[in-house]
Length: 394
Ligand SMILES: Cc1cc2nc3c(=O)[nH]c(=O)nc-3n(C[C@H](O)[C@H](O)[C@H](O)COP(=O)(O)OP(=O)(O)OC[C@H]3O[C@@H](n4cnc5c(N)ncnc54)[C@H](O)[C@@H]3O)c2cc1C
Image (cartoon, rainbow, N blue to C red; front, side, top):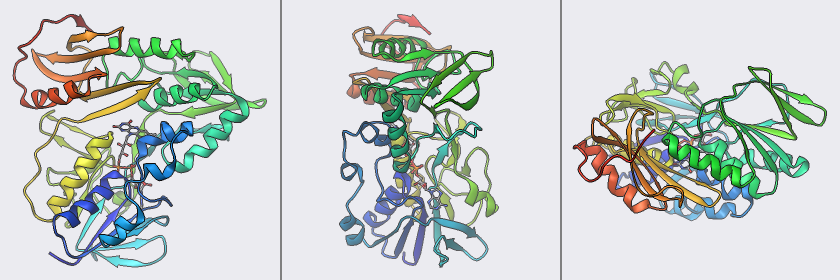
């Protein structure tokens, strides 16, 4: 197969797709277009070592320049793709250039969900370019309000405490990271944050962020207020679907894809955080939001472009690092699941497995990455759980 494949987005989905195409012997042109100015890099480092200032950017790049050159992957950062014409099978780049494609892969990722505010002291964190302003705000004022108790809010709380700033985390939900971990693990992580000096307030819906004096004030729906030198809004992400929508491609909380990563437009594929697709193991539509899922999707989409059969679906998993605690999680937890815990919760060394109708549906591990890996095929198989009795319900 030859011709030209254009990939939009230099995140892990787009970059992996480009690498996979070459590895699988695709001989045609590969154009990998990004709107960030950098080489493709590990985004998870943004809220961890890059924000902390403990890791150099060079160590977060996926591959050095030489790799892209040697593999004849035409990497075009900075200007992005402005529009797609599916009738003509062309894309218009931010540079004004128009490129034809045989296949197009949209790997446009997501952006941070915002809260409407006129304050310039309110930040979001998604890209390398977002880091400097947040670092400057913390250094200057020494205090940060974090709106959102999901993975990124919690990670930033830990990182910023590590830098010595005072941190107040305002979470709309009843428990931290409750989209991915059960209540007992949320509680454990809340205690861990508090032990490190983070003020955690659950069940608080922030409705307003306004400048006040030389800082910013958050007001909750119930009238309570909190102030700090700066605020970070970490209330989830929004799939980046603008290009697809403008091109008339089907979108429904993400670019809609089938199991071959095909969109509603002929020759146009999509992968990663920008997409939504039916997950056969879950039995529902879902939008991936983890590094590993986006990487797997990028590889699978490349294979589909080359005409390979559909790649079998996998149980998604992710990880987070907070206050020196490394946590992995997998599958799909629900608050009503039964939970079995192997190990020591308070000692932060355990594997917790969520069961629904006695079948494993999700898992969380602290300091047990291998056991978490071993559970994923069991979740995929959906066989009844044999090995232990329930010790906690969440
Ligand atoms: C701060 C942070 C920390 C994270 N930490 C973890 C973690 O610890 N563990 C974990 O499992 N997951 C983590 N994630 C999630 C993980 O990084 C994402 O799931 C993953 O990066 C998604 O990859 P992607 O390639 O689909 O999209 P993205 O990484 O969002 O990349 C998409 C790229 O496309 C670009 N783009 C968009 N529109 C255009 C256009 N028109 N033209 C050209 N380019 C365009 C975007 O600017 C971006 O560069 C984290 C995410 C963030 C933001």
